[in-house]
Image (cartoon, rainbow, N blue to C red; front, side, top):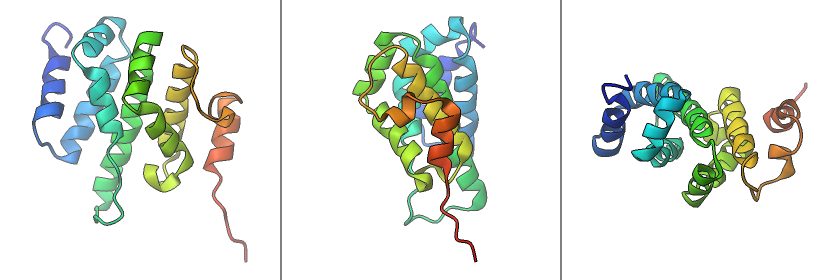
Length: 167
């Protein structure tokens, strides 16, 4: 995939062509997986992959738009894979600073704080927390200590609590 320029082709599609949520889900998954390989990571970052991942992370579940269950599932997977890809691409202070300047931290915090923004998905919460923690390992982030200071399990437990009503 690296030799054939797959990452560049995927980035072009995501940035220049209107694609369905389901296609977007598959393309973001491929990019997130490729971001885990050092030889692909530098190529993805060099061709605008960081900006594209943040753009995908900014897909919002609009309460005014009705989505089918499968569309909501695709959006949830896009959010999760975008956060995973972002955490893999942010492997130095340079990428982290760039991601901060593009608003990635604000969106990751929103995904952590607002369950509706992540479609009440615990996997998106874990991915967003992991991305924030990875970035915080390289640069100082202006975020609550509950996101990056305590253990991941404690942060998850604190943020995933659903207020239940007992009868």
